[in-house]
Length: 265
Image (cartoon, rainbow, N blue to C red; front, top):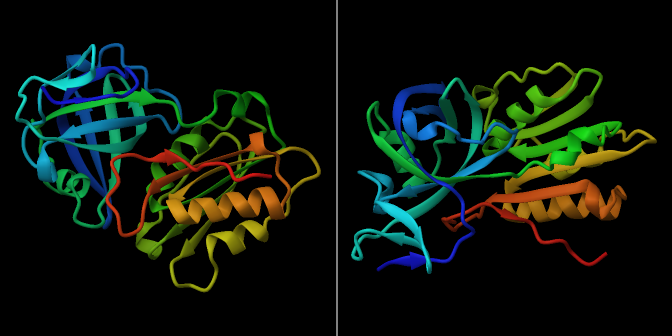
């Protein structure tokens, strides 16, 4: 029996109820069905892990949690795990906004997804600190590439009235930009790849207030490590005030998005 040792995230079965292109390189896949009753992924930047067949096309394998971890009903079955942000969960519908890039199983799934397709996923996993909004920092700084846009949009919507946030988002070009809405005060800067300014340079240019600044970062793993370094070492943010994720790795198809390890101070 195939098994992987993973934290006991809930296993949910759903189906695709609609598909819509938001930009030339981002597709919204909406999931529904009775399996979503009780789903708890209603926080900004929550994540789910899709259980995909090899190549990302076809029916997902049947899985359950056993004594040895996640097990598949068919011992010969193979699978892929791909992690996506919950863009929105409301009225029993779950929106997944998938970036269409590369040729991995996740992109194949997003490109081929059609109404009625079955979907199995694990989660949710909470990737946005619960205390971040409660701590009411003077400034919330959100930095990332196109893979961070779904989370950034959810974070913007969750910003309370009176909250202030700066968003720095890098995409290929203007066609990849999406409007962000919020009850708070937003400053959104879109950086176009190859346009002369890197995310790190944009972060360095932010005028930090005298009070507390908290930062949330999601990008290619190496870029995220560099951004954490800029925030911690150059701008002086405290360890607990920087949350960073490597959502993907260059030249490698990863099965998860991971916390960027903290470097020694």
